[in-house]
Image (cartoon, rainbow, N blue to C red; front, side, top):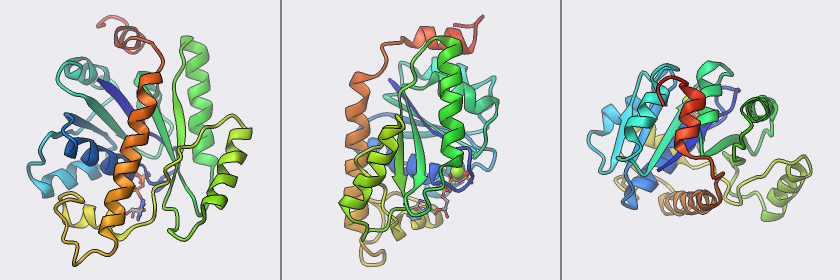
Length: 238
Ligand SMILES: Nc1ncnc2c1ncn2[C@@H]1O[C@H](COP(=O)(O)OP(=O)(O)OP(=O)(O)O)[C@@H](O)[C@H]1O
Ligand SMILES: [Mg+2]
């Protein structure tokens, strides 16, 4: 079981979209996925209510700082992946989710490169790492990237961030109509009508590549056991 959290202190960075693309793709591949909707705006919960039953995917809403470690402990034998969607904030539940994660993904909009919200999360990760003496694996994922942006331009951004010690996923999330439609219509990229949604095949390929790269990061995760993470989050209950 792996816990993957999407965080950026800035609202509208693309967290929920990225979390949903990843979760639905992992579920499509047969993994048991639980999304913990820790955003009071409950976008993924609303999506799930519109979508009805999606095989291998469960959404739990109203997640609070008190309930988050309990959910993870209860789900550890039932889920292959727990994906946490956070609000655009830097509060108690954000810090807790970061500390409980095997992999933190920080979406940054490729076009704007407004990195302030991302920097706040990176600072928070460093603070938790120092305080709890743990390592929290994390990467930036570039999102809403224009499909015409060249590989060379993306490589330049990657090199810039790498020079500041920040790793960036090779797979950017491209700006696609399908990724907006999924929230409006419900369902998944697989249930959408390719004759109605432009470049749906490319959106599906992008989701596949994203999930594959994220899964490839997990075997080299910190060896910190779930028990030790839960002890940090919930001293009396772990
Ligand atoms: N790859 C993408 N392609 C097209 N639209 C996108 C993409 N990523 C995000 N968006 C759109 O950008 C807006 C913000 O995205 P999203 O809701 O995922 O951000 P967020 O970080 O979860 O925001 P919040 O902090 O409010 O929770 C939404 O309208 C969403 O549809
Ligand atoms: Mg969101």
